[in-house]
Image (cartoon, rainbow, N blue to C red; front, side, top):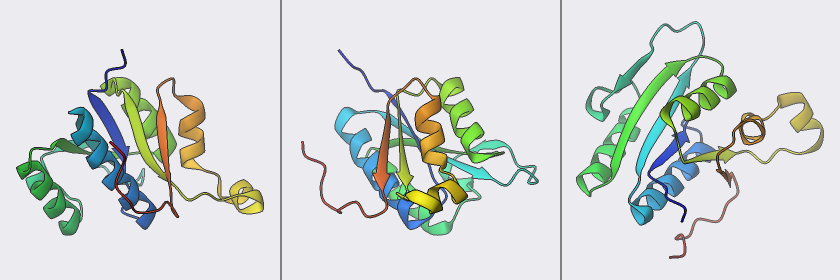
Length: 145
């Protein structure tokens, strides 16, 4: 039987990440899992710390939304790290023993994908755990259940 107890959800506060955050919250509720939101800052920033939602250096809107979800029973925390996004996500997923990664994907194809690269694709190809990619143009509707 598959047991999901730790869901990692990287976020950069883009619209695509916001969709992945909503999926992660709903998914965590349905399977009674803990969700960790991971935000990666540029490598030149020296902040590397685990934060409680209350003292998070993240956006006020995100912190308020997360506190409200926690009051409704969501098991969640936030971790802010410094580094290269792909490497930081892969390392954190491994070190935290995540069971699932839920992250946004811009869905670029062709030349744009070659030029811009894809953090989501690199993570997907590099980890041994399941990855749920939420496309930027994903339809907003409830997860079946």
